[in-house]
Image 1: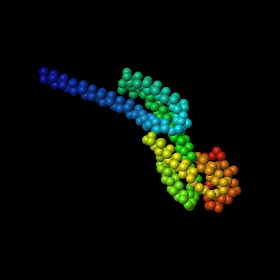
Image 2: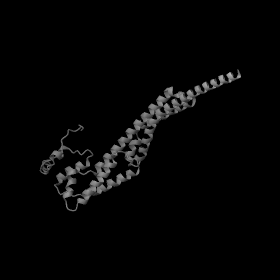
Image 3: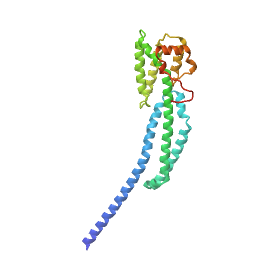
Image 4: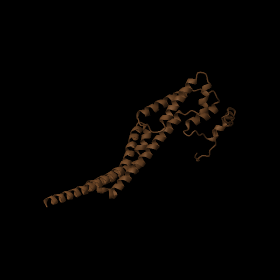
Length: 251
């Protein structure tokens, strides 16, 4: 009988171990689900914070766009409140916290902060890119003319090489802060080369292209398209490169 009793106790112990193993597996699965729900917005937020640190090397007037964002400030406060609420719940409920609203609120507020911060960062970057590209812009007609002017082929080649490198760096927010310094150096070089360019044309025509260079969207008022400018563009075969657009419309 003792042998049977021992055997029955062994079976009982194995059943209890199996039950505990199932419970442990369930707890692990619940914790993994909580982790995965918070991991995705957390990883996005970490990437945005890295980009934010890089953008802090931009001029102050651009950084102020980020620092003064009420959307980011409000969403940050909401996110911190919801995360603290979930943390307090986790300390008492542990894995059972997955079924409570606090987790959903923390997840939603994290995603909201990611969206608000991401939008502010993109707007800041786009405005800076627009600013520097306008600063270094040279109308293609003027740039191409440098190739045929004696002694200015180096100016043309240097400008084009710098422009190509700059365009590559401006495609996205860089992952290294030193890229901002490289971009600024390229812009300084392009402005210098731009100043060395020569164009022996009528001042009225030159003013038309100078205005094109300075405008971020390469637009000028129709009033600058005088008869002299129109005639010159037609004679040079450039007239078809321009379009008339009503103010307020978008491409």
